[in-house]
Length: 402
Image (cartoon, rainbow, N blue to C red; front, side, top):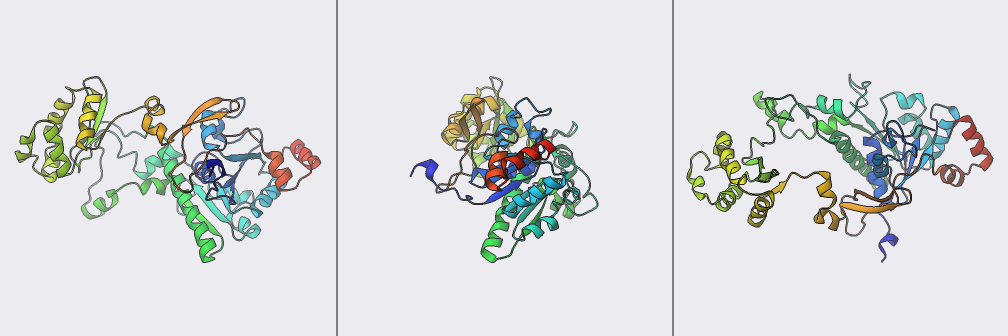
């Protein structure tokens, strides 16, 4: 069967994406990658902030090309009665609605959960916010950066003798998007298999980030110990650290189990290290990290990055180099697996984008097109899908509704 003829797992699932920047739209992108019909609703003349701040001429900033992919874009002024009525006509035909506003904002536009379920009782509604729909902080706004700070993620990131730092990417937004897509799939399954009806999913950025905190909360509850910054070290799994190579690269080695540590000292040509009481087991190594890292660091810095990595790979020791995006763009492994995909856009030409994840053998996802222009699908969605006439569309545009 031709790959383009293969049915995708979410075909026939209409998703209305009302969500601006970034966790909501990314979750909708994941669904669209696997065949859901995603209708992206944006404010006329302004669009989603992902299009560019300020919006570039064609409204197709690099971020939008990726996170707007596989989405049919329409414009709709939700602050108007006519805009809200059109929104509910879209909702009437939908399986999923994505919202990404401060709690209470959607209700002002008659798009709250109760409003939407009156229109479509079987609807799956995803409400994304910074701190959740309930609780003392529900009305606080937030983005990846301040929510990372709130969740404890920023506090634990960086070096002990330096201020905390945030991640170089918007990891909280993406963690939230993963959790959101997962919740939507559970709700769809529960509705369609268990006849549970519609659902409201409350997803917060702060909780998505907090859920990644490993055992920090349990450690604190039982011992009173606060997880502190440890740089690039994993203080409970030694050795696990970054090392400078002879040619100025950074080699990351992770050999904290006794078996892997035995392999490491063997390839270093220093098996006698195993007889040193400071390093004889995992617990001992955690107590004498500095001394051990000096020994490993001296060995690594005598070798180039390629040499060091080859030794680790041949011995089966988990290791890799710190890589930038330019290196990843041309990496043969990333290319072979389509983790880096090259697509041709009619306006931008050849573009490299992240592929479709996860990899499914029988029903792989697909990137049909990159982020469309603002309102590019107004005619198809409002005209063909909802049945509005050319005259009605013209009048709505003149009024600023679409």
